[in-house]
Amino acid sequence: MPARAFADADPNDPGDEALMQTYATGNAHAFDRLYARHKGGVYRYLLRHCGNAGTADELFQDVWMNVIRARASYAPSAKFATWLYRIAHNRLIDHWRANGHLELVSASADEDEVDPLAAIAGARGDEPEIRAGAREQAVRLDLALARLPPAQREAFLLHQESGLELAEIAALTGAGIETIKSRIRYALAKLRIELLDLQ
Amino acid sequence: MTTHRPDASSEPPRDARFDAAWRAASREEPPAALDAAILASARRAVGARPQRESLREATRPERWWWPLAAAATIGAVAIGLLQLAAPDRLGTPGAEPPIVTDMPAAQSPAPSSAPTAARPSGTAPAAVARPAMRKDAPASVATEERAAGAATAAPAAASSAAKPAAPIAANAQPASADAALRIAEPFPAGVAVQRQAAESDAARPSTLGKIVAGQRGEAHSDAGTKARTPRPVPEWIALIRKLQAEGSADEAARELAAFRAAYPDHERLLPHDVRDWRPAEK
Image (cartoon, rainbow over the protein chains, first blue to last red):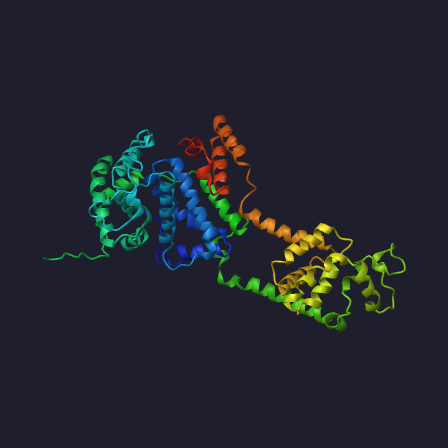
């Protein structure tokens, strides 16, 4: 479920941007609340991409450490969630690059924009952890996601876990809005088949 | 040819059944040890102690004026104290700082007796104190005096503001004077001198070495708030492995999280088995 990331959802509840600014002034309690709102979405976004809990832990910690380090320079020119997931997206790309998963392959036919994640070939479909998972649902979910093209998986996960709007996902990934929409549609069509019988 | 341009802002249709199935299958959360490590890092970064009051309480508008009022009170007291001080001390170069009573009174008749009694009664303070400061004053006093004189000096006075402190502070530790030079150099003379002058009030009875140590201590404590002193990499990895082998999964996870926080290039440093390890599911 997407985290509550909109400042106007409850007028008495400070928005993410206000919390981040409050944290930058030294109030650690604001960070606690911000973290509680977004930790699940960011964690699952990373976990679904890399399929390995240990790696996801590591990337997750790096993302939040970057948030902590950047607190002083944070300016709420965009939604906090957009900024946060951009950090996560970039960290993921760095991870793939560092581990040699980034190969130069052409994006699928319906995707003419360049998204670095689109160039990841077989990033995780063959990882044994996915097949050896303990829980059937999680394993099937992972397998279904692993079969998606990376760019579709990226668009779908950002849409499903972050609560970002299409335009924000498009800006974050460097793709067009229509491209993002079609990626999500394709991903949904494939995952629907896999997931609906889990109910 | 007709071009179909759907509304770019419209979201893909939501499927309630699919969303429910997704939420049921995708519920993972980060491990508690990781939560604790990140939250602790966040607190350390802002130097915060554990807070009991809520955010709303802390940011209530009626409390905003408290720090302002405290600062105004402190300012008023400081101004009052300055005005109470002797006028000749404030403006004239030969003025005597009040701390002269704490100096080793080499010029006084009984140097080894009580230092606070060094000022003979009825004697003009400047007349006694001036020589004492020139020869035997602790370096902090000499520095303060020099800072007062040099505050408006040209940038060329940078070296003269710092270097003469060494001979004057002959009784102080040589390393301290050297450190003072090193600290003063990166700043323009005015900045270095003002920094010393500002700090000399708090450090009045101490030596120059103590001031420098204090400055260094600040720098160290700043660094210390960012991360705890890291263990050497091999030792730390060995510890994590040992904890894993002993079955202390929580401790191993804590150490692993701390390692990652301490070493930004942990991805390269950690062996695969340690990097990919995680505690068993509860």
